[in-house]
Image 1 (cartoon, rainbow, N blue to C red):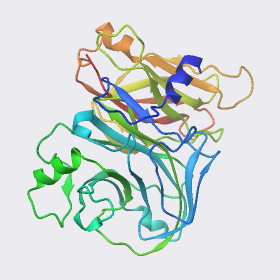
Image 2 (image 1 turned 90 degrees about the vertical axis):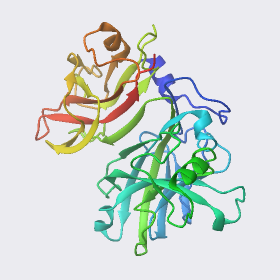
Image 3 (image 1 turned 60 degrees about the horizontal axis):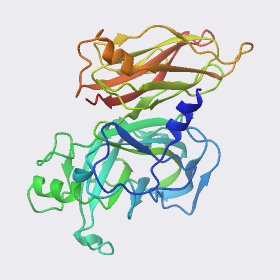
Image 4 (image 1 turned 60 degrees about the vertical axis):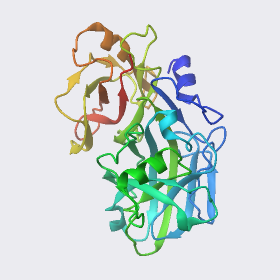
Length: 356
């Protein structure tokens, strides 16, 4: 990968932002420098593992005895605060289940829960929460990292579609939403519907790349295949999607088979449809970009290939009149994999909003 892309993808904000971020900004906590969000699973055997993540470091909890794992961030961090003033637009995370007692337990949805502690962090009785149940189930023990993203309509003054309120809250749904969204003190990625109770069992789970996006910043979602060389491809971005900026916005795919062709395809919505051993993450109608070569090692077969496509050049070319400021885009790569059953490989997806 180009050095400037690697640096941009690894960039993190080390302090909590005080004001609304620039359009298209995303902060990602990859656990390389520190645990910026004070993320924790709460289990007895929890640690940042220097390997096995997506990529590199990951936050792992082994022998977590619970009815539902929940990855939590609380306290003062880049992941908490006044989401409306900050103009937060999405939260994301990569999750993997390594082992669990009852495999059928992965047939429950993953939820994002946002909480407000009502100014009394040590008194849970007056807490208020809102939650969104994602369209994707919690990760099964399938050896893959699953990418999740939930849109946060922080500027809405009423409870947005797809969101629900703490059933113990006695006021209007809009009141709960406004109280929480202007003072998020705790974020939870919850393995199930937070209003349900499940049987206790043992879980081994991992998390990587929790992210917070501002004003349409890029966020990853969906599920990528493992290719015939044993690598799970990873999509990402460097720069800001813009209808006018002279700077590049590179949509990047890493851990690709070397010396193989591939292309980015995109649309204006997401779906999660199994197809040819992978998942179609882009809802039709879709458009495809030109074919690229992954490069990498000139001999042998390995995962040294990569793709990078300047999407700002596509936006500003005028080839697609739908690519205008304010449009929400979802993109995904397909690449050749001659040794696989389907002869190809689908990546996970990248969602973003085009800035002016």
